[in-house]
Length: 170
Image 1 (cartoon, rainbow, N blue to C red):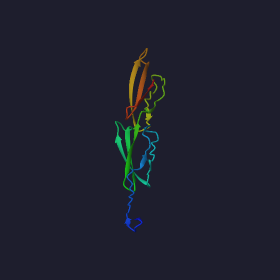
Image 2: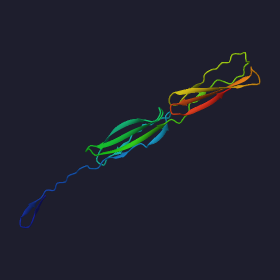
Image 3: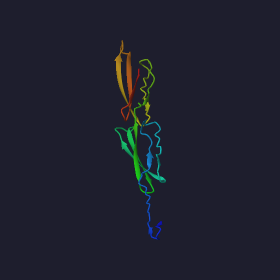
Image 4: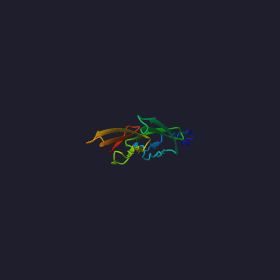
């Protein structure tokens, strides 16, 4: 603008206003959580708001193995960046655990005559997060005479994380 006084003197001045965006977006990330390996593992998105426009997202995921197959950690780093290059980052940690023992199915108990067949059927097991191994310990206890005895078979199913279930067949 120009300013004039009563004598006709004039002075001109220019004002320059510079607008800049130096504020990073506000980032809202999903909450950390711990879940059983057989449960759902939601991979929710983050959200962001920016004071001067839109923000773009990037997500970097890393999986770190735990002590066994059903245990691991997922780290998700979210970054929101605005048009001026201002950025905000936040990390979500998802911890996956295996605390569930295998489900064990064993052969039924039975009583047989000493001259009958004595089937020694195998047990079976399923696990919520992988394979299970089955071990068996057989113990024979003598009865009152040579043809009388009891066989006790203790089956144990163990998963990779050390969770175990035991059952006994007589």
